[in-house]
Amino acid sequence: MDPISLEDLALLDVLQRIDQHIELTHGDGEIRQRMAESGLIEDDEQGLRLTPAGIELCKSLQHRVAADAAAEKVLQERAADDAEGAPEAART
Image 1 (cartoon, rainbow, N blue to C red):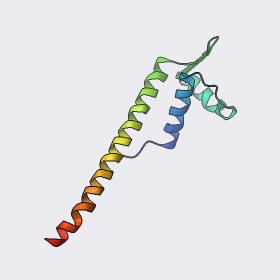
Image 2 (image 1 turned 120 degrees about the vertical axis):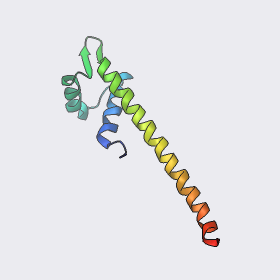
Image 3 (image 1 turned 60 degrees about the vertical axis):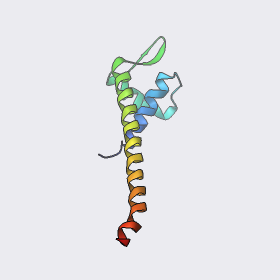
C-alpha cells in the first residue's frame, strides 16, 4: 500500500483548519472553491463549515494517516528484528 499522497495530506490540513475555524490563507482560494463545488464545505453567514461529506472525508483521511503510521512502525520493528537476528543466522 502506497503512503498517503501529499495532495491528500494538504486536503486534510485544509479540512481541519476549516473545522477549527482557522482562517484560510490567500493561497487557499482555489482549493476552497473546489471544496465548495464538491460539497465538502459550505460558506454561509456563519462562515466556512464542513458539510457531512467534508466531515466523513476528514475522518477517512485521518484514519489513513493513522494506518500509514502504524504500518511504518510495524515495518521498522521488522527491520530491527531482522537486523538483530542476522548475526545469529550467520553463526548457525
